[in-house]
Length: 280
Image 1 (cartoon, rainbow, N blue to C red):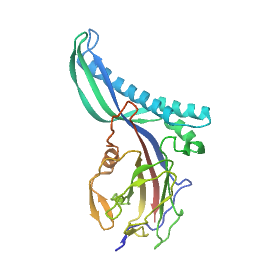
Image 2: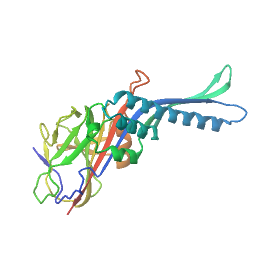
Image 3: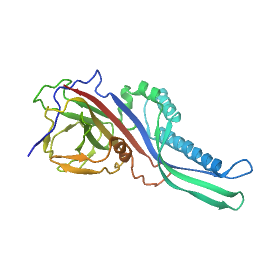
Image 4: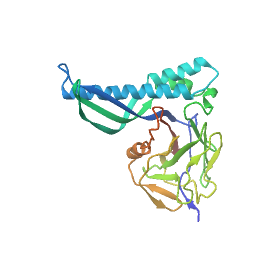
């Protein structure tokens, strides 16, 4: 039985994606030893700052090694954007003090960090077609079938990534209710091949996006990664899942990606996009 959802009149500004950000998630370490010039707290801070610097360097090296474009200046600009990145600590994996035979009391910390490239630089590069190729950082285009919808219309969502990716497709209605459109009870697989156009709903989906209340500003959110995303707290609501977590928690939990540290180059590319929808 098909599950009808909401919408009535949707207007998307000039662009399909009103917000999009690329990032890379890695595991990095930092350490520091006490001395006459450093307290325990200062030593811990120095180790943390080193872990953050190492995360940036690790990601810049990763992007440089993975990206293959003919335009060398373009590649240089991309590497520069990641070299000037911000670091968000997602989780402290390990931390603690230890004794070093030669230097005494030392502190080591391992973090899971999200490295976010310079926003202004990435905006300039966002429309460069050469960076849509599979060797560039993950990029997932998201759009709907038309800009305006009237009552009883059905909305179609489209996804296309430049390389294989996993994704959560989430809808936030005007009341703040969060529904997970994909994966859902009848379509558990949320792995997508690169370069392929996907339509939602389709296949085994048992819901339709019918235009109806509630009204106001709503959002379509896509969280995507080259690795499996972190688990969300959900419960079945017809053909979709109702998300039990708060919106802020959802963004954090999706980034709870399990990174297998096979080598120093282990990383998970991440992409988040949002489409603002006004319903009347």
